[in-house]
Each structure stands twice: as C-alpha cells, then as structure tokens.
Image 1: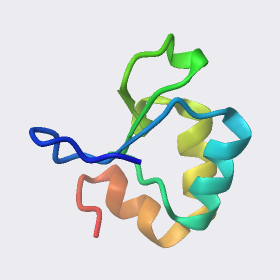
Image 2: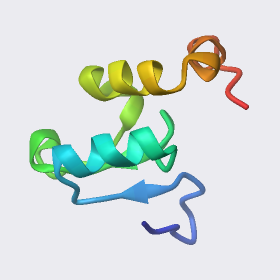
Image 3: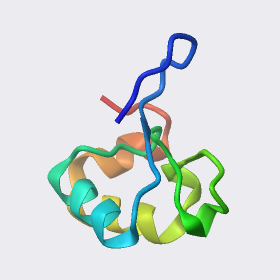
Length: 74
C-alpha cells in the first residue's frame, strides 16, 4: 500500500484477484481505494469501478454498502 504526496486516496497494486478478495473481506480495501492489476491493464482505477470486487465488498460489508451507494461512506 502506498500514499503519494499528491494522492490522498490509498493505492494498492499490482494485486492478484485472490489477494484483492481477501483484503476486501478483511476491510483493508474500500470502494474509493485505487487498485492496479493485470485485469485493469496495469492502470490505477477505483475499486468501485470493478463490478466483481464491489459485489464482494457489498456482501462483506452490508451495513456500509447502502451508505457507499449514496456517497456517504463512513
């Protein structure tokens, strides 16, 4: 994980799919986290744009999923 001088959003990558799912389950990755993997063509993208990752996050964090959908993540 890294935090850049100009980047306030947490960045994680490159990361494998199983590692991403494990970190989602443990609460270490949130929808606004930037991730990089072979599936994102090595680009930094918000986790919220990756449909399978968001589906897993919503299953793992049902109380926060409603708030994140409305832009009110706590």
